[in-house]
Image: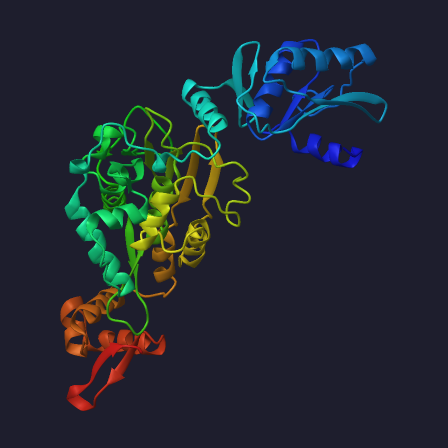
Length: 461
C-alpha cells in the first residue's frame, strides 16, 4: 500500500472497510475487527491513527508485529491470516493490518462471530451465521430450488397458474400449450411431483403457511424518521404476484400527487411525488432478490415524510456492492426471477436498478437519486420524494392574478370562456375582463377565437 493511498484513506475517515486504532494495546479487539472484515468485504486496521484521523504513531518492534499476527491466527476459526505492514508517514510509524474478504466464512474469533456494519464491528446474529454456514457447506444452494417441506400439489393455486398462462399470452402473443403441471416443471417450480420453494412462493394458496418469512410489512410514519407513533401499519401475505400488487397499490394510495398547468392542454398534468415505476420496481427487486433462508425475516417498507425505505433481508450477493450493482448482475433466486420476467413483473433481467435510476432522472421535478446501502443482514434502498411545492412556485411565476387563475381553471373545465363569462365568475367589469383576457393572450395562456359577439378564448396550443 503506497503512502499516498494510505494518506487518502486516513483523510476519508473510518468506514465499513477502515478502522483507526491509536494503540495496539487491546489485541483481542483487533482480532474481533479482523474477524468482522473477513466475514464482510475485507478491510484495514490502521494502528497509530486516532479516531479523528490524527497520526499519533506507535512504537513497535518485530516481536509486536508477530504478536498481532499470532493473536488473530491462533484465536480464529477458520484461521484468518492478516497482512501486517509497518509504514512511516512523516516521522511517525503506523501499522497497517490488512484482512481480505474470506471465501470460507463465517469466521469466529475466540468462539464468537463478528460482522462489519457501517464503521462498527458487532456480533453477528444467529440468522446471518446460519445463512453463511449453509452457503459454505452447499456452494450452489438456491432457496427457490429446494423442496418445500410439507407442501403438496394440492397446496398450489391452480387458478393462479391459469392466470399466469393468460398474462403470458397477452404479453408474448403465444399461448402456453403444455399442461399446468408441465408448465410449473418447466419453470422450476415443481420436480418429480414435489413442490419446490419457488413454486410455493409464486403459486401457493397460502405460501406463508410453509414459508412464514414470505411477508411484506408497510409502516407509515408522520415525520422524517422512525418514532413510537405511526399513521398506519399493514401486513401483506400471499403469492409473490399478490405481494407485489398489494404493496404497490397501498403505497401509491398514500403518496401525494400534484398537478400543473401545461400550456395548450385542457387537463392538468398529474405529478406524483415519487416516480411510480420506481415505487413498484423496488418492491419487485426486494421480493425477487431477498434471502429467503433467513427465518423470522420479512420485507419492511417504511414510508416517511420525504422518502420511502425498502429493507430486504439478506446482504448483497457476493461480489455485488452498492457501487457496482447498477452494472453487475447476480441472481440469488433464479426461479423467481425467471417466472416474474415471463409476465413482465420484471421487464428486463439484470436491468432493474438502471431503470429505477432512469425513472428518477426523468421525473419532471428532479428528486434526489435513490440511495442503496448494505447493512449486513439487510439491503436498504431509499427513494426520495420530489418537492411538489415547485409546481406551485412555477405557476406563481406566471404572474397571474386571482381572477386570471380562476378563468384558466374555468377554461380547463369548460373548454372556453367569453368576456361575459369572465365577468360573471369574477364579478368584475367588462373593461377589467377585457384587460385580463388580453394579458392572458399576450402570455400565450389563452388564444382569441371568433369575431364580434362570438369571440371567445381557449387554451393556447
